[in-house]
Image 1: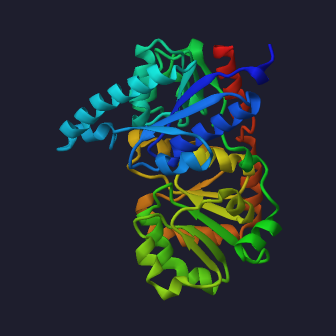
Image 2 (image 1 turned 135 degrees about the vertical axis):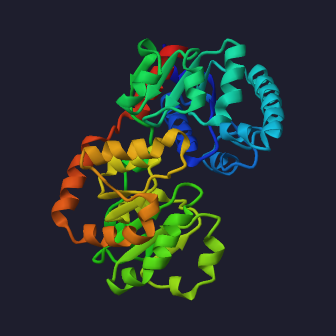
Image 3 (image 1 turned 90 degrees about the vertical axis):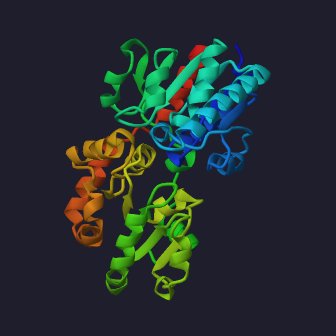
Length: 369
């Protein structure tokens, strides 16, 4: 059978945070590569970043109306969320009947719940992709109805039916596998490749506590002639923009990093939250790594993700409560420790799964072909 002439229809339920959105985009890109005539539709929630990000990659997205996660059921807004959930089931079901997909892919997060529920109701095959070492509620619920579950960590196996679960790693976009040279990246960013470059990523929304640590330690970074690429996030960007100290040739700050491959290529050391997708990307590019797990992540999954790397001596952890005291000092110490950096590069590369996206798409094709 010639796959090039097949016009399969695929829905991807993906949204809430970059950690759920970008795996969906990576899977969609690989599907397009293998089945050029495939028809892909995303379902996300209005007022979330997927409505802005997914169309940038050339994919259509239909919106449902869901504003929060499972924890909100316990709050005063629980009633509103329940109404939103019922309405979202209705919208997702309507989209499902109109689009008539061959398979529905869920990349986790509460926002994919109505999409997977509608797929189950319409008896459409389901593939689940779970990024974290401890799976989220939506994927745990729908695992019993899924045809296949693709996981990134061995530790996630115990939460899913063994016979349908496969370890693939997390899907990453092809640009991460083909980074430009450090020299080209530095020219593009206006940085000097002879000076240490630190990349700080606070998750898709930014991190207030990481920002405070950099604000407190920025004078030291400048004095030591280190360079910082700093993703601030939307909540603190206006405060940072008002402070003249941050307008220094060694500092690049931005609300959101649009071109992450360029920044990865330039960086000597990466500091980030312990989101599963960022970890998977850095395991592939192999850079010295400091993790600051988000302490309020659901099921404490960021701390669990980070511990796996720490146990393999592939990353250092700075706890959120110690961040203002320890982050900048830990960065400076790592910059000056060549042995530690080399050991981390070697160990983190062993954890990378560059074939993950291809392996996941192969599982999808086995279901629909």
